Length: 95
Image (cartoon, rainbow, N blue to C red; front, top):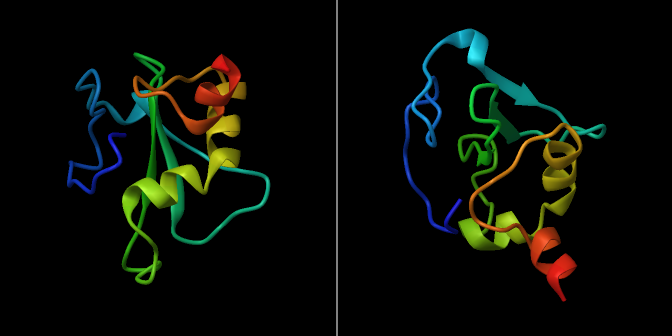
């Protein structure tokens, strides 16, 4: 979200705090990449990209990984989700 690494409970929306399992969804890109996930909330329609460092132990810093995965942003945007910090795709559209 902010380009930094942070820990947050998996079964809670970091934006609105929703905790019901029915409100939390995991979106998937057409071509799966092991260790990368898109977690979204059906309540507030926000999403966050996740990286499991147990699987992707050699991944780069959070900001590099965020900017290197615009295809995940497209999956979320097409499904009607948003994120409060502009993605690289959203920044490019403003130019």
